[in-house]
Image (cartoon, rainbow, N blue to C red; front, side, top):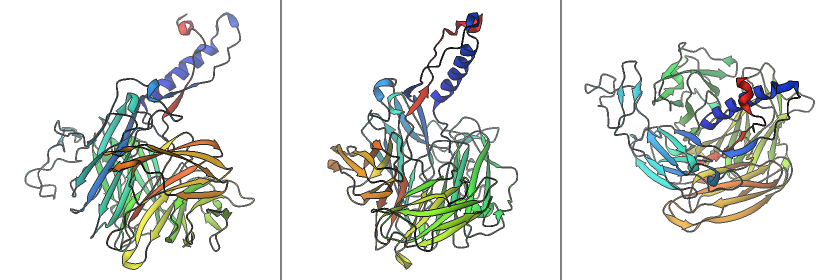
Length: 525
């Protein structure tokens, strides 16, 4: 998934184009000069989008937001001194009239906005920020109760832009949608893949679409089952109004049924944030975030040690079938799990394999690659992970994730119940983990770990001294091979094994800026 949130990127692209033209038109017929190595500078603007957290009146949602302090992954010192980071409510998709003509029976609430003549909605002046961040390295938090919590749209600029991260954690103790629902607020984009959703009769899966921009977005949602594309009841696309958020029940998009589906979200115009909320009558609920970009090799980190069921779901978006080798990177090495050593994924179709209790009391990660002698056909993938059994079971999702190249952050951690998983699929890696101060007090803590090649290291991460509130964990590779990371948050309640897992892709706090090697005045000659 391409992260297109950084305003600096447009400037970089323009600068690259101008520089290239100047180099190709060197005066006096001289040879074009060699381009200097691009500089890596902190981004100047970041955007994040959070879906509406829950529909339950007993839901409790915690937001945690942080921009890490300057370090190897970026630096506030090189950024603008003026900075801000705010997460504000998005407007509703349609105005709610007093007579309840939309079927809700409710009037528009403050901050939900009003419908414009073009059918779009715009933010009301009373839509105050839910979370406001003011200082790098110091997280802030907020709590919202009930089902009225809206989707959020946020922007960080200046010193707070590089690596800005926000986490939304919702606890629903009983009833429909029971469970801990965790999601890292995402950057807007134009293309998302979600393998692992469902159209089963006992499931109520929604894809949430949030538009951060001042113009409407037109979004296509395609569904793929084990036999290919499912017939869609919606052919004209889904309109997501300016500054609006739209939850779409997947079962309303098709008359077909499928136990497992891959959801593909693309935009015809504009950009959106997207996440899938999966909920089952017996399994609880959680957020499924987008898989890493299609690739011939994937890593799905952070399967809990006590997982009672693990199911791998994959989809091949290209023209070629994928013959996959499935491996488990455990604490002691990489093995081929018995009965789940391989998976064939036909082009344009969703495939799955039941890996049962593959971790067997030892936390691990799933590694996917081409089978011996097979080409590396691109796939997307995710895991459906269950803890507990029967009435105490709870589900979470782990999408394939890219490595942490410079820095990544999990924003919401607690004094107890956080587990950090670090996977080194290649060579041994050395990783620094920083625990921020708490949202209400505490002192930063730092610890360095060594992850042996081909293994997963699952640890109870460092906790800030004197912690009050929640805190953030920042992961920075120091040396060695690539590292993939995930954070599990265990919040059991009333005997139910409630939990959620968030992967930690790189925060992309730095961007490469080409250096201009020549006086660009030659363009005017």
